Image (cartoon, rainbow over all chains, first blue to last red; front, side, top):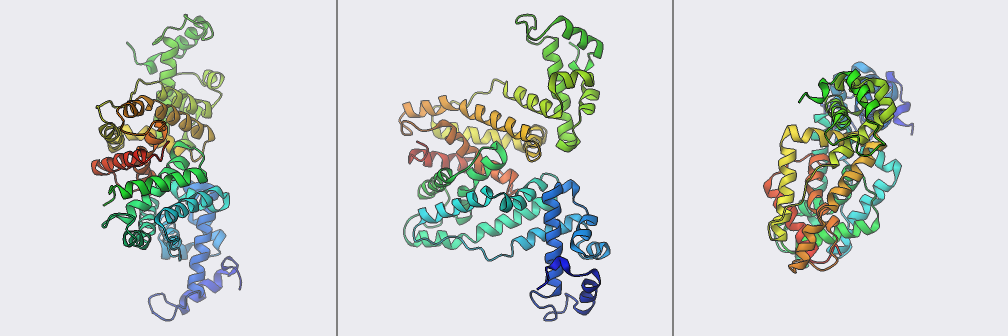
Length: 218
Length: 218
């Protein structure tokens, strides 16, 4: 299959005329509209990582996605809409929280995912660019709020299992536990600018566990 | 006393000739050199808040501090040096951690300071601008690392008192406790872009306390 960005502008415009997004069933998942959206998203992310929010323009996205500027303005409204949709797409993955059989190990695995993702420059580039963009764009900030809110909500089963196993009190707020695991690592990455590693990941997880056990998050 | 920015360029250059910084005793605290540095710092902070790191130029600082561009380049090297010095100056305050008589209340007071500072747009502007600048400037990142490292080191007496009172185990790392209190609040402010308040401040403090008691930070 051709990479989305290889589609010509004519093909994309044709595909839009043939498959109006408002008619259910006519746009198949993975079809041309989905590919257009993915191509546009890829161009937004590349632009954001390369030039930051102030350097991201509809012109750049048009050039790098092969989608006409007029189409971008019509469907996304402009840079802010493009940014928001890229974040929405990022949230449409199938990520589920770890399930190791114990809360301690689930939380440690969660913390290690963060260290692994941000320790890898290629994986870190996009989330870092979004976190930076939120300093300048309210839409990016809203997008991040939505993205992380949804991500933490996915941790509910992880904490529900721990409550069933009697590891933490009933009524423990899963989102707060997930935030507690993440916060010390993101704080070092983006505020105090200190390095993170596996030892700090374990400590973040153990701290969240101790607080949860003590009933701080009920 | 005239505001530092009111000093003319001639006065400043004269003052530098008369008071070489390398000779101890000739530059009195609060004297012209200190005032120059403060005027330059003020201009750096104003520029950073108004235009962000990409918009901060030596020209801007010269215009807003009344200090000649040549002097700025000679003494600070350029924008990066100006930024680093402004952060160094920010660290030269007399802040000491709370001392309420109990660790729980000390940590809660610490957390409420963060909520109060970042809840006040005027107080929040400068630290927010530095945190944003660190995404683009390694010198700003180094400066933040130094600033927070020194700030957390000042929390040693707070934890030492708690150890004496038997509230946390001997060997508890004060810096880690201070980071634990701060992290959930900064994480919401600058990553998940969620609001913070007094309830979250108390929860951040109580979580840090529970983890410290459990020996996570020894």
